[in-house]
Amino acid sequence: MNVQLGTSLPVATTADQFPVFVAGMDDPIKPVQDKLTPDGRVKYSTGALLRVARKDGTVATDKTASVHVINPPNEPFSFGTIYRAEGLVWVQPYMTGMDRLALSITVENLVPMPAAAVSAPARKSA
Image 1 (tube, rainbow, N blue to C red):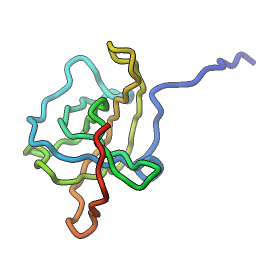
Image 2 (tube, helix red, strand yellow; image 1 turned 120 degrees about the vertical axis):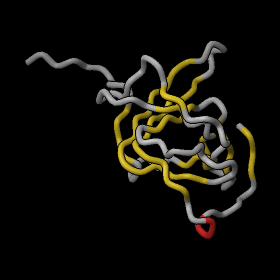
Image 3 (cartoon, rainbow, N blue to C red; image 1 turned 135 degrees about the horizontal axis):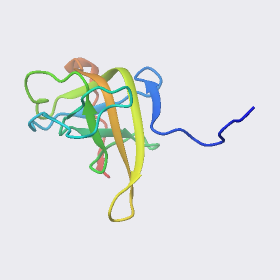
C-alpha cells in the first residue's frame, strides 16, 4: 500500500464547522482570473473584511485575509453589513511578500446577518 504522508491544502470544510463572518466594504465584485475553486468553479473577490473573534472577546478585522465567494450577489457587499458564510468553505494559508502568514478563504455563499443578531463587542484592528 502506497500512502502519501502529507497535509492536503486547501483545507475543505463547511461553514457549520468553520464559521466565517465578514464586514461588507461596498467594493466591486469581480471574478478572480486564472484561479478556480478546488472543485473547478469560478470564484469572485468580495472586498469584504474577515472578522476574527479574539480570545479576549473582542472582534478584529483581518486585512491580510482575502475572502472569495462562489455565488456572488448582484450588488456589492454593503458597507458595514455583517455577512456569514453558508455551504462549503476552503481555507488556504499562504505567505505574503512580507513574510506574513495570510489566509485565502473561499466560501459558497455569503448571506447578511439580521441586525438584531449582530453584537458590537469592542474592536481591534489586526
